[in-house]
Amino acid sequence: MSKQPISVIFKPYEKTVKVLEGNTLLQAATQAGLVLNTPCGGAGTCGKCRIQVATNAGNPSEADILNFSATQLKEGWRLACQTVVQQETVAYVPEQSCFTGRHQIVTESQTPTVTDLSPALRKIYVELPKPSMQDNDADVLRLEAAIDKFEIDLPLLRRLPSRLRHQEYKGTAVLAGHDLIDFEPGNTTDQCYGVAFDIGTTTLAASLHNLVNGDELAMTSQMNPQVAFGDDVLSRIQHASLSADNLEDLGHSVKTAVTEMILDLCEQASISPHMIYEAVFAGNTTMEHLLCGIDPAPLGQSPFVPAHARGLWLGARDLEMPINPHGRVYVFPLIGGFVGGDTVAGLLATNIHDNQGTVLMIDIGTNGEIVLARNGKIWAASTAAGPAFEGARIRCGMRATTGAIEKIVLNEDVHCSVIGNVSPVGLCGSALIDLAAVLRKVGMISSTGQLLPVNQLPNTAGAMQHRVSENSEGQLEFLIAHANQGSADGRIVLTQRDIRELQLAVGAIRAGIKIMLKQAGIKAEAIDQVFIAGGFGSFIRRDNAQAIGLLPIEIDLNRISYVGNVSLAGSKLALLSSRARQQAETSARQAKHLELSLDLEFQMEFADAMIFPDLP
Image 1 (cartoon, one colour):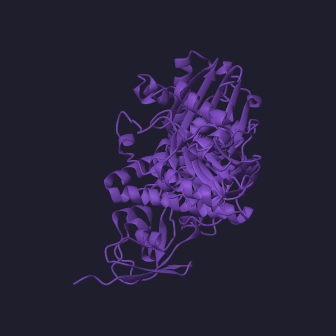
Image 2 (cartoon, one colour; image 1 turned 180 degrees about the vertical axis):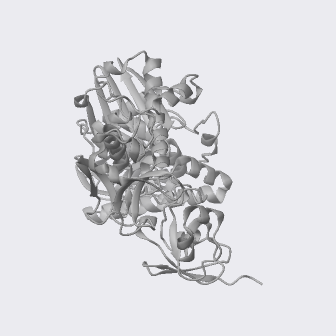
Image 3 (cartoon, helix red, strand yellow; image 1 turned 45 degrees about the vertical axis):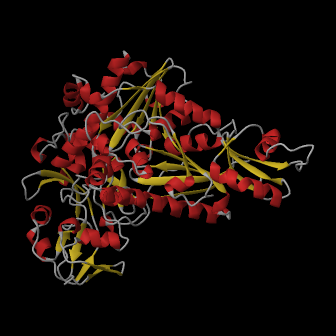
């Protein structure tokens, strides 16, 4: 006899779903359309998917006991990923556990715009002479005489004769590169559009362009729904590797979001999706594999080999894109297993191959990408910084959304800036860097990352001394603010363990930069420009990043600039310029991929890089 579905109600969203006994509340929430914070992919290790079960909470799991106090457990607080549905359940989902509110998603970039408008997709209106006994050339030759030679696939070739005759040999040829992909009735040359996408691990961004004049018509962004399967690419690789169904789920998840975004763009610009003929995608290696339904399992195993390297030129139908069914999709080329199309797009957007002098580009995130360019040579590498910058493994950490403290400044005491101008809920990555730098500058954190006890604090700590205390676990912590929700005890704090997590993240990127400079035979002082790329990088303060060693302290602040979302910027360039697209292919193959884990000195550099630099 089959099991009867059980009702689960999620408040305050008033979402009700029916699931089978044995499913977790995380699975039920996903079915209800709620994307909960699961940096660990539902393994129960991050403690971020906190919910309060009002009815039938059941016995707490080991993970629940580690993450909640006895009082909280009595009040029904549980981790959604560890709570199994056994009876009808009502659960409250606090804001900090769910992807709601206003996220800070960077869509702009400070990079040159396209000057060479030469899209791969173009339209040509023709009026052909009708065949006669004196002029009986084949239909394809007749059309080629008007628009130059082209390739044509069999399905279109089967339709072309009837279309030409029905349209009295008048119409619009639609070409993608040298391929004829459609022949439309009438003159539709003024209706030719394309979309550019940045497929990020955490966020998605897209822009709609008129391919006739290059104008940007609309912009949209949203969170990547794949976060439900884990914050980092390794979690998603592992999930996808378990079964073909899992791989399909991950691909379907992002393609559904892409569909929503394309329809949103079309609504903003009042155009038909049928008039979009090309979509360009730039993302990291894992994201591009998942988008295309390519098994990413080899990326999770040494030697981390991707399935493709050159850019992919696919049919819109292959990826179920809601654009013209004869349209094309271009997926950016890759450099290596963890240096993907988003980095190649960054090379293109910053024109790094033509920059004079020595240029360092850093995309700071869970997987930090580092690029060094000098005298026409390009080195590229990735380093696993971990999820601390996204708020994972940080006691009161969260993403940059409503209620997150995103900036901390020192003015006798600490002062916080909160996204949305609401009461604080937690701490996001940019504020974590700020706070560590502030405490380091006043001597409250040692060079080894130790938060000093009150009796060892210097006079420079001033009014902040009263913020240091010892928690119930005997661990020192620093009080940042009082929360209106989130932390059950109403306190947003920085713990000693949080500082260690930050040191690991900073150390990985700092060591990666040092190894790369050493292999290129370049000293940090010789760097002429530093580009900080990516959404997270746009919100960090340069001086604070240098104070904790995230950016080389030897470099003058004036040489460090923010370039924003270069992945989307590069995707736009490739959409609008065939020459730019070819440059992307060339740069991807010219770049020397450094596998930092194979460098014998990396572990030693990593250990040294965890020490905060001496301040002037």
